[in-house]
Length: 478
Image (cartoon, rainbow, N blue to C red; front, top):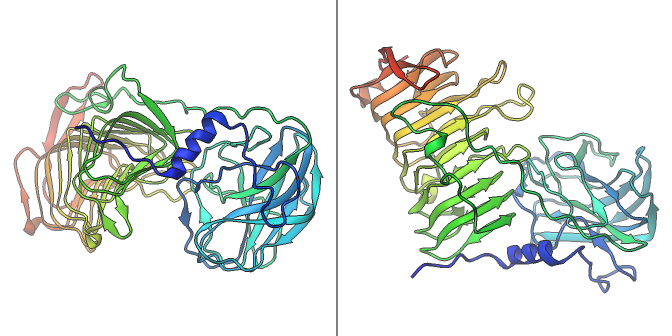
C-alpha cells in the first residue's frame, strides 16, 4: 500500500493560511496587546530555512517593510532561539532613520519561538513608505535565513523579495541598513490597519529554468534527467515539509522555497521538483538512511540558496538533475550514522553564487566531508565559473576530512580549480575531464598509491553537437 506523506501541523497551518486567510490576526488577549485587529508579515508557524548564526558579536537585526493601507505599528516580534541572550530592545524606524518607538522584551526563556512586545502607544505610519522594525541582539546567536525570497502573508504589509532583511553591527542599537546574501532575520511589525485589508497575493512560483544546451554523447544531460518532459505537479507546497513516517513515498509534487526534512528511514522521493529548495536527512544528530531520490529536479528559485541540493548521507540519487544552484550534492554525517552515497545517471550543472566575486564562493558539484563510501557513476558534473568566480571542483573528495573511499565509473566532469580532486583511497575508471575547463589542472590526486586507476581515464573535448573526443590520457596525480 502506498505510504502517505506526513506533513507537520505547522506546515498544514501555513498552507491553510495561504489558501484562505487574507492576513494573520494576533491574539487580542496576548499580554499587553491593544484592542482591535493586528496583522503581521509572517504566519505563526516556524520560519523556513532558519539557521542560528554562531557569532557572539552584538548586532541590530531588522526587516524593512511598507504598508498598503493606513494604520499604526503597535509592537514588534522576532524569532528567538535559546542562545540569543538578551536584553533585547526593539525599535521602529522612520524611512530616514529616525527612531520612532522602542520597547524592551524583558527576559526570554523556554523553547524557541516568537517573542512579542508592544509599544506604549501604537505609532501611525504613512502608507507606501519604507519603515524598519528591528531588535538588538547583544550577544549574537540570532536566527537567520540566507537567500530568502518570500513575500508577506498579509495583504496590509509587503516586503521587497530578497531585500527586506537589514542589519547593523555594534554594541549600541542603531538604524540597520546593511544586507547580506538576501538574508532574512525574522523581525516582524505588528500592524493595526485603519481600514479594510486587501487580500494577500498568492505566493508566486519563481521562473523555473530546468534545462540548458549542454550535450555530450554517452553521458546524461538536462534533457534526460530530472522530472520527465511535460511533467506537471499534482500539488505545490511553499515552505518546509517534514517526513516522519518510515517507508513514505513522496511523488509528483513541487516544493518552492523550502527544506524537505527527512526524519525517517527508507523514504523515496520520486518525480519531485525542488525550486529554491533542498533535502536534509539529518535530524536530532541522527541520519535517516536508505533515502532514494529518483527522477527529481533541483532548480534555482528567485534568489540564491547557498546550500547543497541534498545532504547529508545514506542516499541514492538516480536520474537527478541539479541546475543553476551554487552547490550540488553533498555526502557527510558519518559521525551521525549516515551511510554510503550513490549518484547514478544524473546531471549536475552548478552556477556561481549570487554576488560573486564579492562573495567568497567555494562551490562544488559533489563534495564529501566526513562521508561513508561514495560511488558516482554514469553522471555528468559541470562546475561553471566566471572570471573571479572559480569555485572549487566538479568532484571534491578531500583528505583529512573523515572521508572513506570514492568509486568513480564513467563520469564526465569539467570546471573548477581542479576538475577532479581526490585525497582518499578509491577506484577511478572511465573518468573524462573536459579539456581547458579547469584553472590549475584537470585533476589533483594525492593517494595514487592507494587508488586503483583503471582504464578509460582521459582528457576529452566536447563539440557543440555533443561529440566526445579523446585529447589525451588522464594520469593519476597532478
